[in-house]
Amino acid sequence: MKSNFSGLVVAILTGAALGLLLAPRSGKDTRKKITNDSDKFLKDLQDTITNGFNSIRSQYDDAKDSLTSKYNDAVDTVASRSKDAVQQVERNTKY
Image 1 (cartoon, helix red, strand yellow):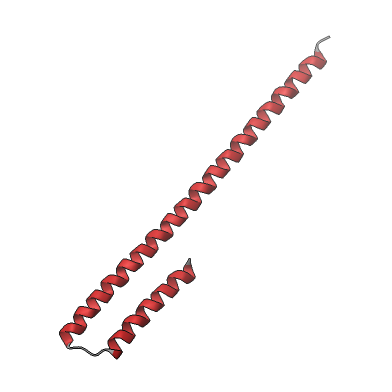
Image 2 (cartoon, rainbow, N blue to C red):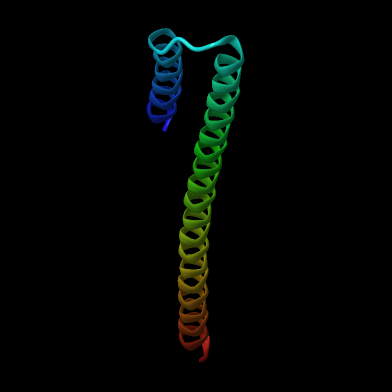
């Protein structure tokens, strides 16, 4: 995730700089282009961050569900074995 984000930032900044250097415009046009490029960069950054958070949330939910299931299975196993052990002790102690 970090390398994707870094790559995105570098690519956007490089593209914006090259665009400004290689395509000279009037000051007004250049300012408008900078504003548009900045807006696009911020939108892309927001999308990247949102996707990252969604990915983290999904991984968290998956891990939570898996751990909850394993915990419940362990509780069921312990309860069953405890019940079996109690029944065996009761059978062995009834004389």
